[in-house]
Each structure stands twice: as structure tokens, then as C-alpha cells.
Image (cartoon, rainbow, N blue to C red; front, top):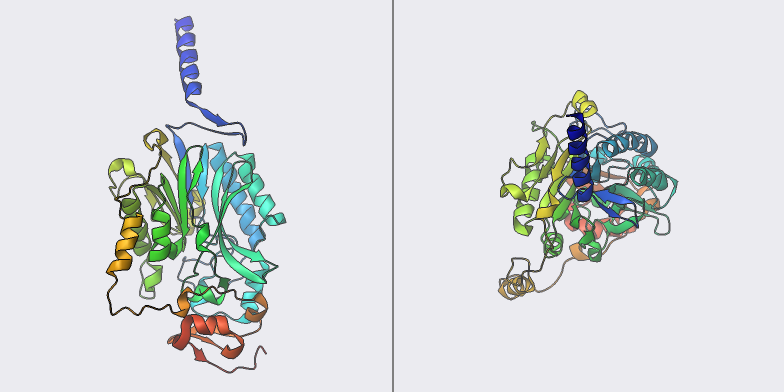
Amino acid sequence: MRVSTFFAVAALATTASALIKADNKTGFSWDPANFKVAAVRYPPANYAYPIGENRTWVDLDLNATIDRAIEFIDEAGAEGVKLMAFPEIYFPGFPIALNYNFTPPNFAQYASQAMVHEGPEWKRLTAAFARNKMYAVVSFAELVPADDALYMGQYLVGPDGSTVHKHRKLRPSGSERNLFSDGDIESIRSVTLPFGTVTYLSCWENLEPTMRYVAAAQPANLHIASFPYCSDSNPDTQWWEYCEGFRAVVQTYTQEAYVAAIFSAVGKVSIWDVAAGFDPSSGNSTDALDAASFERTPYITYVYNTTTWGTPTYDLNGMHSWGALMQIVSGTAPEVPRKSGTTFNHYVTKITDLAKYYVFAGATGSAVSNASNYPSLYENFGETYTVVQSNEYF
């Protein structure tokens, strides 16, 4: 009996090993029928509780956030996670006070915690992915010293720690433009990886027509949506903070583009699977926001059967096809002015300016002192800006 059991176990082990695939170039190995992914929900260092409700300025800490992230990267790696998705600008974190009270000294502190691609902090973080042979979509405040600017970076990191693809948020949303510069639309590209083809966008890029269309027009198996944070509904919750809205945007995207999706945000996260016919209950989600739940579950996981994904192909008759785009162009109402406003210009906002001029968000919109010396913000928002003279910072 023992001999029979031994051979049965040996046969199972041989069968299981035959299912494992490997990429010799990177050392990445995976089981196509059991491909485990993770969505990070744990707050960056110094985030105040309740998440999304404390709107006073806090000094975020890049290295402390990396320290904590490495802990759960290693935990996830030990349980077989092969792809991990992070919330928007998770390193060092999204400055929630940006929409409420944000001064030049605050910005200077935030910029000091931004991460340089291929800098020491970046290499320390990506070494954890390499150690665990894991892919990751890393969203971070990217400092580019040569530009004297910050970008909303969203990079795809390979299981050897290398950068597979770079994407910078094309158009920072709302008051994010007070801090971050514009990316480029050419970086919105699908990436074919050993296990499937992936697309990814940052926050409202998943909603904005130009960015959403460009991504969804590229066939993929899996879409990764990085949002900053999700808050519970309360009397002070703003329209852009409702988690239900964020999730609905991504769920709609999965149906339009026919892809599985990972929704990652500080607080609440979701993973959806097309195998259930876009049933909202498919996949895995969490709604807990208390500190204990973060410690207990810093990320959630889900196992995809990638053998069902197949090779994505272009649909010439699809809603994101060239024909659809031409129909949109030809069908645009005649009363729509045939000219472009300043919204679609490309802006690079200098850190040295942001650290000097006083910028804040008030009840009637944003305000900037000495707007004549700050043209990028003034042109971006036009009449929504009130010019306020202040001698406090210059």
C-alpha cells in the first residue's frame, strides 16, 4: 500500500511540474491554470485614519513606505503571487490634503520624498520583486531632476527587477496639476508578457475618453487600474472620492475591452474575472477600512486560469476600432467648435516654482499667487483661478 501511495504521489508531482512554465531569460515561472495576482490596499507610511477623511497635511515618508512594501512583497512571493498591483502614486503616497490645504513648504517636503527611476530607493524596491520573481505595476511620484519636475509614474517592473514599460499619467486630474507634470499618450501601450497581454492606466485615465480609448483599442487579457485611495461615504466625501464610482469605472472598462481587471487603491481593492461573464461578484474584493483590517490583509489575491485567455486580436468591427474613431470624428455635432483649448497642451510644472509660490484649494476653486509667473497652472484652469497676492512665500 505504501508503494502504491508513493507512486501515486510521484505521478501527481510529475503532472504538476509539467504544468509549470518558465522564462529562462528572467527566471520567471508560473502555472498558467493557477496564476495568482495581488492588489495592494495597505496605506503608505504616515497616512492618517480614517482613510480619506483626514485632510490635514501629513509628511509622507518614501523609505518607510518602501520598508513596509518589501515586507508584504516577500509575504506575497512566499504564497506564490506572480503579479502585484499598487495604488496610484503609492510611493510615497497620494497627498490627500492637496485638495484642501497645500502650501509651498508642504510641496517641498513632498518633492523630497519622490522617487528617481533607477535611483537607490527604486533599486531597493525592485530588488524585492526580483528576489520573489514577480511582476509588478508600481505607481510613484517620479522625480526627474533634469526637468525639475514631478510626474505620476506607473511603471511595469519585471521579475528580474528591470523596467519593462514606462507610463506617466498623461493628464494629472484636477488639482493634481498643481504638483505633477503631463506625461505622454504614446506611453499608453499594451505589453505582452509570458502569461498574457496587459494594459494599465492611472486613476481618471480609466475614465477620460482620449486615454481610455487609446488603451481599450489595444487588445489585452488583463487591465490594471491604479487609483489613489477609497473612502467610506460620509457627509464630507467629495464626488471624486467615492469608491463606488471608481469601481464602476473599472468594471465598465472590463466589459468594453473584454478584459480581466485589477483595481488597486489604498483602502478598498477589487479583482475581476471575465470567466464569470462580468458578474460583479466574480473575483475578489474588500471593503474594510479600519487599521486592523490593513494589518490583517495588506493586499488581496485572486487566482486566474490564464489558459482561457488566448491571444488578443484586433476587432475591425469593435467599439474601439479605427472605424469607430472615424465615426466619432465625422459625427461630431456641428456646434462643437473646431479648435482646441489649453487643456490639451503639454505642461511641465517646475518644482522650484511650486516650492516658492503659494497654491491652495478653496471653496470656490483653486488659487495661485502671482499667476503671471506661473503660466502653466493659470492656463490649465483659466478663469477657475483667483489670483491672490501673498508675501508669505516670495
